[in-house]
Image (cartoon, rainbow over all chains, first blue to last red):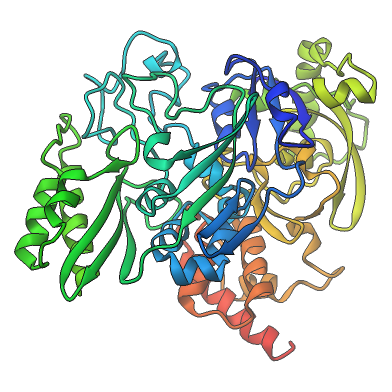
Length: 325
Length: 220
């Protein structure tokens, strides 16, 4: 890890001026579980690190009629142990419960989780100057792409590693951003960016902007949610494929389905075709299978990751049937 | 891996001389042999922020500083760089070597310590972030010569093979039992899911934690 200068921010308003115009100038740090790893791997070599933990009052979970508001410095453990989350947002509770390990959940924040950088082994290795680091190619193409994307058409084939992001997207959450011109609100569905739009980053944040809050609308009555994750190890592992599902089912008929896959694309991947197929249909096993087929209609697996298509299908079928019963 | 070794050690300006009658330890030898070379090579690279004034530090930050760490109830001062992890500060500056650095990327749990009562990976925590917080390492578990019931149970149930992961497992076990004195086997597995034992002695570890929990409930 290259040394850097370390600044403790004291207010949200102060942060944009402590950051720079380029990601190489300065980065923010909250729990640090992703950034410290990136700096150890020389995937991030910032001149300055701005500590956000020194800002008072960004660690909260508040409930009102509209839903839940979660401050950017709230740890994953605090989200996991919150009774409003476990009772009303099982999809988020279940997602957070399978993130990393107790130690990481005590350190990492919810906002940091959705801002994680890719786990791609080429990106994380100093030896590969890949597209995401300003290089000329994506080494997953023609390389070992077991853990890479099955959706999207490049030019980078990373997958988004977050478990919380698909859950928050399935719930229709909003990200609150603060920058030099003040605050802004962006729907999770509009927050993440595909590589063809922004090869170096995975979301709309500029180098001098931070996330201050994530707000989650109250799910509609009759709506149920669940999170499924398939990984190689039972603990401390990223998803091969995950699925966040929130469905409104009345008398066996699906009124609305929100299905977001993780680990399959450079951003949390909304299975729009499956959602459209399910709307207004009575759920049967055959229809759950058709929804699963629709979810992977556009998949274009690489030579080593075709298995992800099968997992994605199984997860969609399983969740649709479980939430309809 | 190289980065742990390219960090300069500002508090060790000369390498230790070997005096007649000195008792050799493996650690002492490695430290003496390694530290001298490292210090000579990179000592000039140490930067204390030129900012100097408190006002400038507020916006420019610091690249190194003398910090005060509260470890197992005693206060220690150490000069660290911004990039120094808590694990490296504890082990290399303060010689508190219970927390082990194995993967050095927050995946194995050998460096586990408690920070204000919460279990964390010290290899992913910056030393500067641990200022003003209570750090508990495995060294703080025993009460003088009498072992913590968990430590006794690890011995009794043969819950270690090579033992390198043990300090981390003990810290996670202690944190688990502090929060829940009557865990189910499933809760024990979940509570220890951030620690890896490559010898594979998990069943004995789980057994030791269950047995210690029972003893502690009976006030033993």
